[in-house]
Length: 122
Figure 1 (cartoon, rainbow, N blue to C red):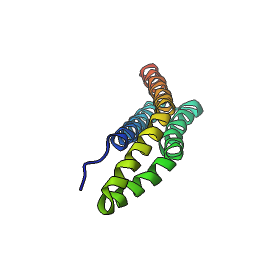
Figure 2: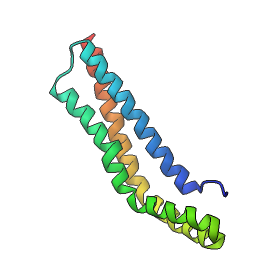
Figure 3: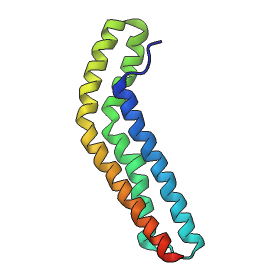
């Protein structure tokens, strides 16, 4: 089987970093609970992080994920068509990168805010 194409690896890296960031946000929130420093705002930050990683990013990438399935099929059955599919996916991922980067930037802001709340709760 052909190695995973670069556009899909790039998309995978955005999803993996968003998932890890959300896990970190959840740990920070648990720390706030332990320190009795949690509040509605902290819960809202955690909820927003979850929405970014579990809903908004997947919704943005839905069309690319459909193309990914197409590529996997064609990679086995029609390699020249698979190469054309990768070219199309590259364009789609290039269009998504600014939006994905903005969502990840927001997640970084959420984490910074949660870290500040933890620091103040100590």
